[in-house]
Length: 79
Image (cartoon, one colour):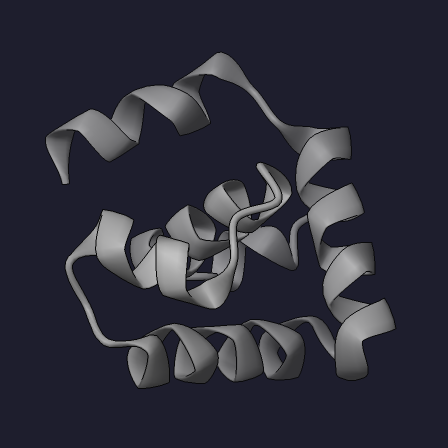
């Protein structure tokens, strides 16, 4: 889905970590940002993908899983 291409690297990172069933607090700690920043990224992800709510965020994770490629994993190491 090319809507995922509109997301920033940090938004992709939030989605990838959320896919691992991490809480907002765990994601924030992993990324070195505040919980508020993680929540803001989540809102922006939903907005960019035209989704809303918790169900919409789950759909975003499914979109990521359906389009995940090895190249997407590699770019996080160079961020």
